[in-house]
Length: 113
Length: 112
Image 1: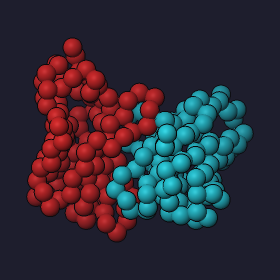
Image 2: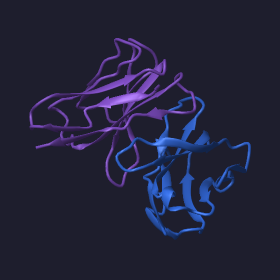
Image 3: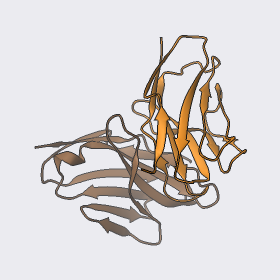
Image 4: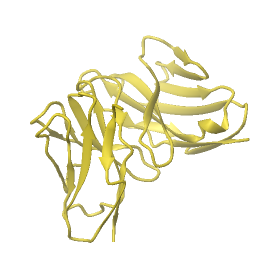
């Protein structure tokens, strides 16, 4: 089945630790995105990548880092610099940057303990 | 000016009724207006989308109405069913930026 796979589904992190969220897609999409979702708020863009080996900061990139070494993979690292990392993280992709439909993974819920 | 304001925050509708969710925007450069549906524990999925050259688009029980002069667009769900219970997000983007600007979401509950 084609789609976007995020892992793990639930993640617990101690304060001061970095943690990496995985996102893999087999849709052959060029563009990939990371969003953060908090209760009562819309999705906020963390980083996006228009093409492999390229990525750009979104609206709330501070405390996060990404890489795009392979077309199908776009991992997100939540660093200790992120002051309030507990949230639901969503990865998405689209055929090309600017294509109208974004396909989402099932999300990773990160909790800082 | 980049905001998309969505209302209501939550909505309860009887089975068979009409669910209506509204969104308003300020940026007149927005030219793409999608609605996404999200079930608990899942990622959002595109439901229906409209561009400002039409005032209405219908797909099955779902209709988007677009009022360019009022800078508003809305989602109507006809004959609402319990399976429609989900969170609905409106969004908007421009042809020059493409970044989706999201509304805060509406939690819809359809009572059987």
